[in-house]
Amino acid sequence: MNLCARVAGCAEPGEIRLTREMFRIEETANERRLPDQDIISFGRLREHEGAAANDVVLTLDDPQHALQISRWHFELRRFPDGFRLRPLSDRQTEVDGTPVPKNGQVAVKAGSKVRVARVLTLTFLSPMGGMPGASSLVTRAVE
Image 1 (cartoon, helix red, strand yellow):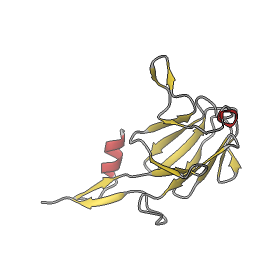
Image 2 (image 1 turned 30 degrees about the vertical axis):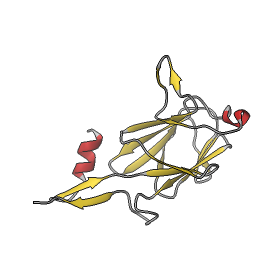
Image 3 (image 1 turned 180 degrees about the vertical axis):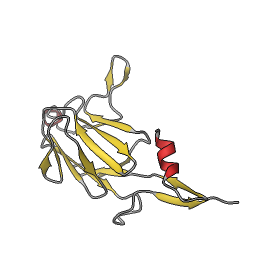
């Protein structure tokens, strides 16, 4: 099932559900919207063989610290009940202070903190400005 079908499937009749998941890079206070796709890749590599390597490129001002982030560090997978993070790297990835082994999976929700290679922290934000438990915006269809 694709993202559109899942998002539409969780709306009530007469509603359209719009996802607006965001994350913040704590070291820079930069907030970004997650791409609207089922699998989102995160890593330091911008391009590979002429194509985009990661959906979210993780960079730091200090090049030595940036090299601690793997080229393909982790992916975020969208499921009907939310997101799950799956590390692709042997380098450390922590979710809410707990290390997640390569190819393991852990749920990520609004408020979760993901520590990447001990040099970068991502905080996943609620789409509705910090309201606990919010995972999407809902609009009523006009008839």
